[in-house]
Length: 361
Image (tube, rainbow, N blue to C red):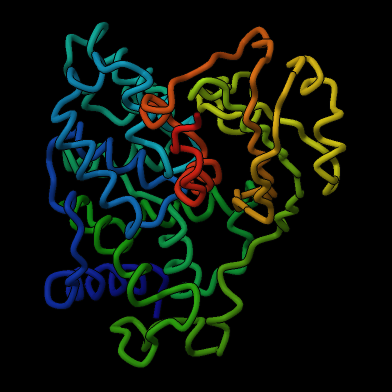
């Protein structure tokens, strides 16, 4: 079968599957409002659909349009985002919303090129919004698309190489159903998520199997190819949960490290696990000038897995009679602590250690 014919067959069969057998349900599926499509795509960056769905519903309920989220307080939006991770997405989302509201008169841009200029929007997200909202003939290329195309056409070029990205982007545009790009893009992403899965793909019921090079040559498990190996590092975070007069010592994370704009307790980071005494002897803890304090509880062994690193967290809960509040930190009433957004591992700790919310005499 010639290359052009193979591409046409691929598109026809994929659209047939989408029409007859694609039963994947998502609240934003078929949505034409560019704001809601944009919101769903930002949430789904680095997030599974199963987790992102609840967040999407909560955001739409609280912020039904671009003006609502543009005029919301940062702390309020970050709190609603809490638990999703990759908080730069939330920061960029606010920047883009405020740009649209103030500079574009609240009107979402309607071309791929203009959408691509929004903060936090890359080629995939711009293509998705342009296609789903305006039916522009732009092909989306995400992990699902890479996998389906690599297997069906037998492409062994690495998907994370410059050559591979260019090759797949070109092929995706060639096989796109230009007359109905929104349905086609939805079809290929859903097909990759439900049929041509990374593990245990459903080749026995796949409508594309008769023409799939990977299936016919027994290379399904080998495609797509990635050349880069993800190297993960480990970090040890020791948190001092210092309480005085029913208030807790907290700070907002700044800089370019993880969890920017989220709150945390006093942090002592160490290159390896250490004893409580070593943490208490650290310079930042000594700067608190603690007097008459008691170590109420130590909870360790908590972890949060990020894309490139694993955070190992230990929480040392102190009840203090006297302390000095360092610059950049503040004492927050226990009743108000849940209004702030924290990283998932700290949120988990607070849910686990109910003592945090008990009143001390």
